[in-house]
Length: 142
View 1: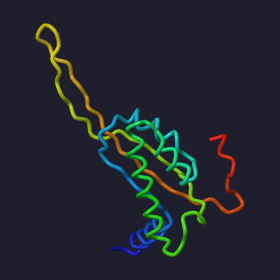
View 2: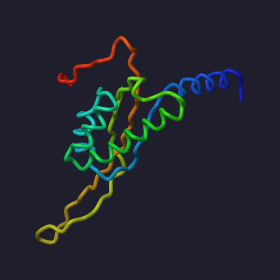
View 3: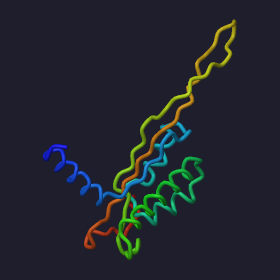
């Protein structure tokens, strides 16, 4: 491996140490339904996001709750000895992309067939920590 390639690989590795994320792949929910849940919690504090997801009646909220818990666990692995409450973590970025699509046929009148597309999605969640002087205490505007 060349030195330039090695240096850039080391830089990427160092940058990855400060990023706390979790990814959910091929979730069998349509991306449109999942985006409703993702928009609900984007920018929220982690504790408040967990509460909102737990109380949400949407089916996709359970999957995103589990994903957020996984991202918190990833943060705890990289920051041993620190408490989540003291770190003022928030959901910095959450994105929903279309995933694999299962294509099926459904019967239609007069011997025809309609195509049914069963959609899935990929969800990526990235946590960030706010500086201590920037912590938002009023959550009514979110």
